[in-house]
Image (cartoon, rainbow, N blue to C red):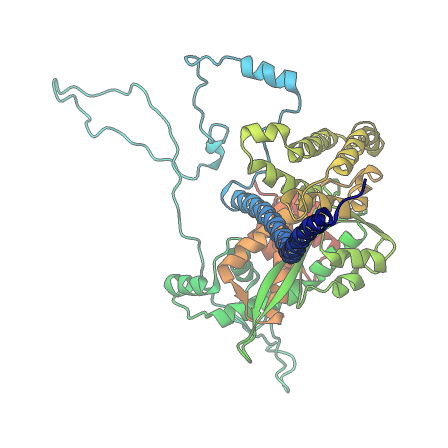
Length: 555
């Protein structure tokens, strides 16, 4: 079917309209597409910007998170340090303000402790009060008896004579000033009137004085030495005393000179004691040291020096306490003295003793268990009762306490084979348990417990020598007790004026302290020794010799 021209033209017009309409829509779509592309690009830019900001925020967040983590770690570290400081402060407070005993109420035998707790004391039945003088035989000491009678001889009522009914005795102690007297010596010469008329030969009396030409006598020297080095009376107080009692101007320098002469005279006694200690029967020497400040008059400088103290085992028959002055703490002078010593040295953790043992292979060290026990005891003292029950320090201290209890039983024995048998049977298992306990501990670094464990581990090998030698003791308490009298006297005189003064002080202190521990009357003993030092054999004059103990044993 064919369209006519008019229809064809009309159709063409319609198609042109539709084409224009489609073109317009196409243009609109193109514009919208263009706008969408622009918006998409804009959105992409915004998205990129947001992604950049997001990454930046994530980095900042991670940085803040890391900073918070580090701050938290620092906070934990500060808290730990505060806890350690608090613990150390508590331990130091215990050391300073709590009595120095290391005895702590730790239950070793639980059933026995429960039995003791169940005992009920009877508040009514109290033991009679006793005096410390109940066992003193006062009658043997009486030098004067006084009778105290009533003033009345006649009855004030009937005037008849009173009769004796009963008497009561009691004792008093009166102080009488020590007798110090000045003796006048007149030396008279002689000659024969019949012979030697030509040259008139004179006969002079022989001089037997120890300190010839001096007012000093053996008794006066022993008096000064005893009062200065045993009773701790300083020279300036003795100077006042002599001025008041004798009216003599005996100065401090005079007395220092007297003591130097006495020390030089008694030096052979001191050196013989050193040799006896070096070759003692038990082959055990306890050693310790303390400070002594020497003020040098030349430049007024003060220098810290040291006094070493040596004493034998408890089982040794020749008991002595030797004090030796050295200008420094260096072990070299001691090494020369102990160069050929073969035996055991009981000591603390001073590195000089380790050097001594490495220099002389004949020396075996026994370190002090009291020094091991002390830091654990200080930790336990700083805890309350609830904390002590679970404290690792309490468990270690418990085992060490058992060792000390075993040693108390050992000291009652004299058979060295039996001593070693007891130690290997009873002490060795405790040592093994203690070793396992120390190995199982994982204390916080820098804590008091870590310090205590490290000290025990460092000295462990030198703590076990007592298992192989019967005359060794667990502690160095013998030397530490010997140090105390010197420390007490040092608090009196504070310093020594010179090295020479320090040396003669330790010589005299050694002889006097050895006399004291052997129970001698110090003044009488010193007087005798000074008088007879050049007459009798040295062996008989030693403070632990049988003759001196028999003759001067104090009552």
